[in-house]
Length: 371
Image 1: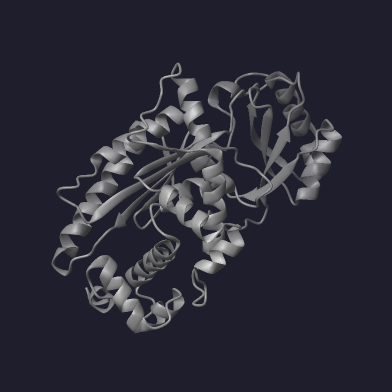
Image 2: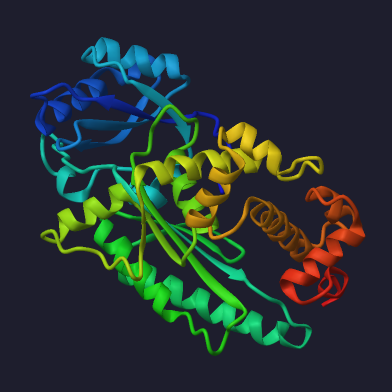
């Protein structure tokens, strides 16, 4: 689940500056003003910036002909060269960070001192099918539409911004961890297991900065939230960092571990390795459990124990279900026939695919395809 964008005539860049000790929001404002004073010499246009004194980071949003021109501007304006630079889309930046220009209150001042962090909490929620019944598809679609309306309403109530909605998956950005957690809990509470027992809600929450060594905005944070919602046992999973930040925002009030699964650092590391590897090989028919053991560096027994604890599935079941979930997505798009989808998703034959699909969802893929 990654953010893609079209490249404009004049590229837009977001850069990261790691601030030395003693550098304040006022210093950053002065450096930003120095950029503005000479930006015309480099055909650049500084739109705004974010400064986080606590985490010692600053981010500049600049229209520039190239990364090199942006670096040259910074070098000659104040000498503070960015650590990382990524190309971004203005609409996506605004969805994540809430603005692409200076805040109103800062515009009226001679020096725009903006102590506004770019650190965000990213929530991913997925509405997944546990089973499918031929006579229940239409009511199910109506129930999903109702859930989607509720998710949108709750996102707004808790000051979130929907960055992306794709089918029954939402990517939502929050300024605070507290808003993200409380919104996630309310979304979870909208699920009615009596009315829609064949659906499940899966929620993942992580937090981070927009620019890292990766190419896309918030790429690491999006991946983590996506993987949490995709694979972890339970319906609401978060990182240890999110738990610590929540408790810090709420006078050390602990989160209920009965309703929210908190991954420790070791579990998070394993999850990232597992999902990164799975994303690369899931469509390969010849892949089996031995490949997981070899590439993750786990013995057969240790891999089984670790996956049962974290994912709630054996390696074999996990890979099969991952493929079936991908197959379901392709069936809903109806761009390929059942046989093509069987091979595209790593199954050895259409017959074996149909058997596995029926065992999991209670309906043949050919029947679902026609509905």
